[in-house]
View (cartoon, rainbow, N blue to C red):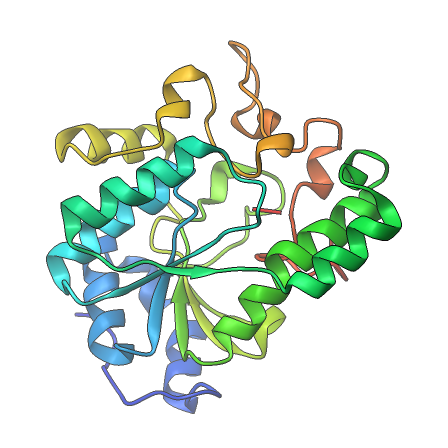
Length: 256
């Protein structure tokens, strides 16, 4: 049976904390977990969808069947490719879904570019983290401050920075908000099986060799045999390939 559906606000209730610590959510299927999350938190819960990864699109499709009014948001950094915008429009049409688009603070972007240039992210990990923080992390923090929970498409086998994620956890990086990773135990093949079975639209750059699509200058196609995350921040070591959205800068090196 799913864990109890209690009224939960931030900070999370003691009952929910005990259920998380007990591992009760790990036994739930993805659909069961999403149904519980919607019942417990809606409308103060939202799906984070980059429109550049199949995981987010699979979750979006599942949620559309559970609660058509569910909320979905995305981060427009100002550097994403046209293919990603095109997919957003397809989603609006197919699912009749309004997408909450988050933008970075213009003044912060202007100051960063004036001091460091347009392509600062190639110069050092620190400057790449700065760019991610201004364009992604800070807008996300502002948005999440109005929610009690959020949903991500993280999987444990995506990289060394994600192996320990739980299906439900307390997100200390974002002031103790509840974070759900319903696909934590899925493999890439599971995601693509769902996509194909349900005819879910995806970013057209996947067909061009991009396993995931982020900002245009920070994403590339990969070669046969390369790690799926090899196309993201390819000039860095695997241990630093996070932007601060899912892992705080104090523990890694920052990206999604």
